[in-house]
Image (cartoon, rainbow, N blue to C red; front, side, top):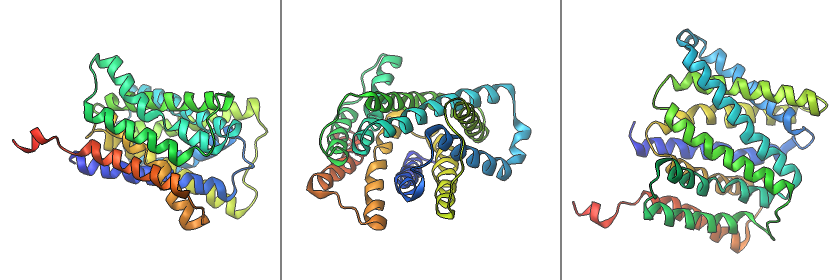
Length: 287
């Protein structure tokens, strides 16, 4: 698989994650944060285990340790994201969570002690302006919800960078499946400690949570490591920024929600930033 195919695959993951807003809107507002994490990743883990149970013959201590590590980080990502949405506006949460696109190159600079390409810096700038226009309706207040969202964004940036190293080593499929189980298990523990466990009350809510489990979790977090073998963490971060764009498109199609001029400008800037990051420099074209 070349980098172009890998990035198209990651774009399909961003599309799947963009649908999570729509699925949440359908009927999951009554589900508590850790309850949601437990159900969502539990369904994904059971489904993927049944589908790929033969792969567990390859399970080693190294794969188990890496699956545990990625599962813990994944749980932290969604703890920040879900709790953040509960304590701040959806628009502010969408923007702050998407700051992953900035945090990934910053962390890469610290780790590698090397500045990113100018093209990546400009792309990130385009994308952040676009995300602000697309998601923020009034202002972004630094409240407890904002801090949760930033924590989730930082956790996801760490997830991308750690997965970049792991994806080039052991069986990524097994690691991906194990991380789903670990995230669900931690969700169950925290649900029992801090919440009252409950199940979806209607068939529509069940359809929504199964969709979150299979489409957004099983597909998304199993395909990402495969795609990440063939591209860079910075590129994955930029493609991740397409999630709110896809969310807005799906909301327009199914919920008839409109963005307004500011939102459409933001969507164009995000798309433009991602495309610009993929363009070859004139010097490279001339060789």
